[in-house]
Length: 270
Image (cartoon, rainbow, N blue to C red; front, side, top):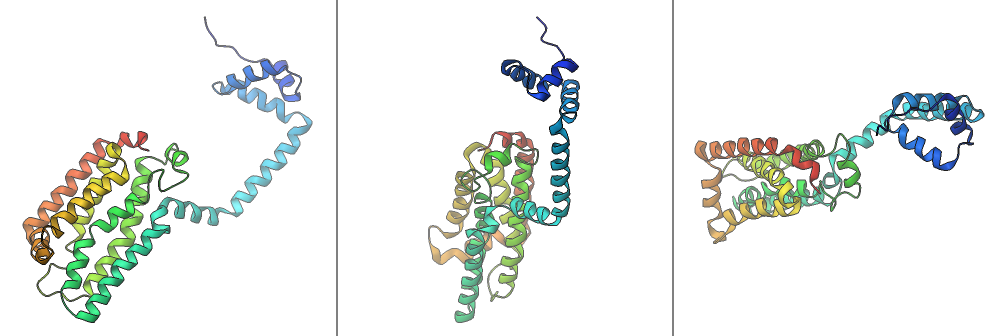
């Protein structure tokens, strides 16, 4: 049996003036969700009532206020899109890592400072991404994820914000530290990007916190264990030279391909 029907002008007028019985009004409201013609007919009937003029004035006032507040609202949207990590504790942690490395280099004047920085730098953006997306990080996550700009697009926006802060800060810090016998200050960039993209690709399966623990934990185990005395040598093997950097570039490309292939999984990520 077909359920296609349309409301009449008289029925729309009764709905607008409040005289339509409540069950019929509910039925009409449900129908208006999927029928643009009837929605326009009811809207015209409402505007023709005494309340229509008031609603028109209120709508005009709201729109005028929104136009005046465009600069503020754009800034607010940008700050929100940047993510909780950039606005919260992660920024402080980033400054602590950079500051500790600078202090170590200042007081000891030894390459241990840059070694420590290079060991920790690749996991800093991973931590920022983990703290930027998901219900644990954003009380409005469910609402944001359901919008057209949610899902992978929002995750990438917040990842870009994290990288835009961490990359220049940590690289500049590395340039200010003693360099003898350790990789260059920018040698961590490709590993950091690869670990970040790998985290994004893994997150729909495990969640952001677990994914970041896997990627960051794997990196730290590789460079810090089993003997802290050999950190410099392990970092050199992981970061120095064209073969090592080419391998990280391939890891970046592979992680990006996996993320693109699984982009629809972000529609279900919580």
